[in-house]
Length: 262
Figure (cartoon, rainbow, N blue to C red):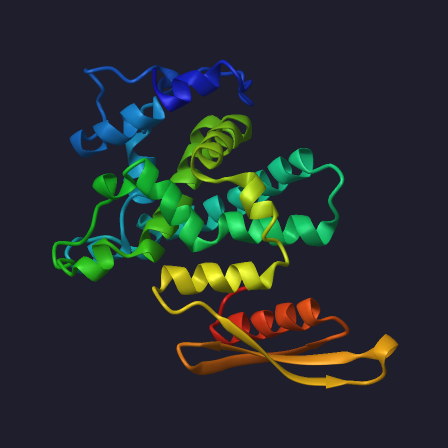
C-alpha cells in the first residue's frame, strides 16, 4: 500500500468534490511514464498532467524548448515554500505545546532548510521525475541538493493545489517522521557546540577544539573568553559568565563565520 493510500485513512480531505487524482494509481495511469515510480511511492496520480509538467520542469528546459519562465517549477516552488512553512509550523505547534516561539521558529528553520528538503526528495527519488533541459548534462545541476530541495517545494505546491491542505500536511508529517529524529533535533536547538561538531563531521574536518583564553573578574562575577579552532584555524571567540556558556558563544560565532543559519 502506497504512502498516500495509508495516509488517506488518517487525514480528512479538505475538498468535498471528487478529483480524478484521488483514484489509486493503476497500471493504466495516463500520466507520464517517468512519473510512474514517483506516483507509486506517493500512492496518487500526478494529475492534471499540465500542472505537474510545470511543477516538475527545471528552468534549464527554457534553453531547448519553447518554454516561458512561468511554465517551469519556480511559481510552484514559491507556493510550496509557503505551504511547507505553514505545515511545519502547524505540526510543531501541536507537537511541542510547552515550547516558546523562539524554539519553534528555530526548529522550523531546521526542518525547511534545503538540506532537509533534499533528503525528503531523495526518499521519494524525486530526481527521476524531473524534466531537465537537453543541454543540462552537467551532473552538478542534476545532482544538486539545492535543485532537489527547490523541486520538492514545487511538488508540494502542485500537490497542495490538487489535494488541499489536510492531505499535504499528512504527507509531509509522514515523510518527516520517516526521515527525521525529532527528539534528537530538539536537543540541538541552541546547542551550538553540537551543531558545529555535526557540521565538521559532515565536512570530514577535525573536531572543534576549545581553548580558554582569559578568565577575568572576581569569583562571583567571572567572565570567560574562549576560542574554537578547527583544522588549526580559529573560527570564533566567545564570552560568558560560565565556561560552557563561553564555549557555546564561540561555537555560535564559528557557525556564523561558516555561513550557517543559527
